[in-house]
Amino acid sequence: MNNAVRLENLNFDYGKDFSLSIKELSLNKGEMALISGGSGSGKSTLLWLIAGLLRAKSGSITVAGQRMDGASESAADRIRARHIGMVFQTHHLLPEFSAQDNVALALMAAGEPEKTHAARARELLNKLGIERVNVPVANLSVGQQQRVAVARAIVCKPAIVLADEPTASLDDVNASQAMDLIQQACREAGAALLCASHDRAMQSRFERVIQVDSFVRTERSQAHSGARA
Ligand code: ADP
Ligand code: MG
Image 1 (cartoon, rainbow, N blue to C red):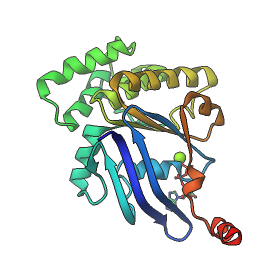
Image 2 (cartoon, helix red, strand yellow):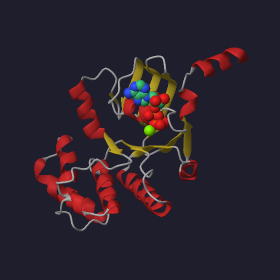
Image 3 (cartoon, protein in one colour):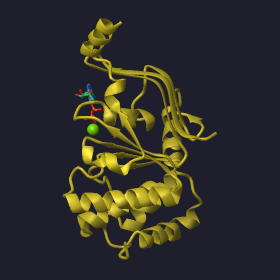
């Protein structure tokens, strides 16, 4: 099983206004790909489908060899906790909790042995440049909070990290540093990376660029393909 994630014959829609249709899409273990497309093109929808947070109408989604489609909500939660790391535009950390506890919670959700949580969280945070692991994350800088969010995403050594516009709220210098950090952390954890961004400048960072528009079926695109046929 060489795929971190594999989608087959996937169909999803939000009523008649927007639909995605993917015949086949897979990422190898450790592969890094950018999902590119303008605002509203379906990038987040695709990531949420893979994470099991949205359900497709038909087709299969396999993450680290486990079927996400058809999984019960609790089974999907378990697959997500064990095999998927998520990074967002805003970090979604628990502000009152320390960096160490935010990261340890991910280990707890994944069912890792409890007595290893504190040390594993601390070690990874130190490696990512966070020394003050016991202060509430609300007291850390935005850049530090983002490092904590990256630590939380990779601490369980997921098969894949899903990053949704992870740099959209940062200036160019910080965005570049944040992407370096995410890509380096994924490389070291052996995780594949699927990163969604509307920023074309991101394309040069990735060995593979997936245009989400190619999966979108609008009345206009159907009319076009009809005209071509
Ligand atoms: P992106 O992340 O590329 O900006 P999204 O995946 O968020 O795009 O959205 C794709 C399309 O689906 C957009 O047209 C958006 O308006 C629509 N959409 C997103 N979420 C919902 C929803 N919960 N209900 C209906 N339509 C939605
Ligand atoms: Mg989005």
